[in-house]
Amino acid sequence: MRYTRNNLKKLETLFGELEYTIRYEKGNFQSGYCIVEDRKIAVVNKFFDTEARMNVLFDILSKIEIEEKALSEDSLKLLKDINKHTAKKESETNPADEN
Image (cartoon, rainbow, N blue to C red):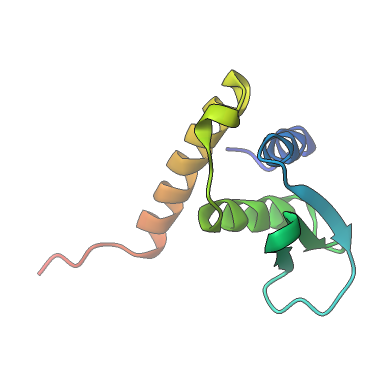
C-alpha cells in the first residue's frame, strides 16, 4: 500500500463507516495519537506527514473492534489490503528464528 493522500482519504472513509471521527490537532501525544473510546474519536498529531498519519491509523485499526458488516465493499477491500500490509511489515521487523 502506497502512502498517498488518496489512500489516506480512503482510510478516513473507512473510519467514518466505523463511526469514528478523526481529528488532526496538536498536542502532547506520546504515540502520535489519542483515542477517546466512549466518543469514538481518534485525535492524530496534525504535524505528521501523510505516511505517519497512515501508520497511526493502521495502528489504531489494529486496536479497535471492527464490525465488517458495517463496511462498504470498497472499505472492506481496503481493510483486507491493510491487514496484508501490516502482516508483511510485522514479518519484516520480526523475522522468525531459524534455530
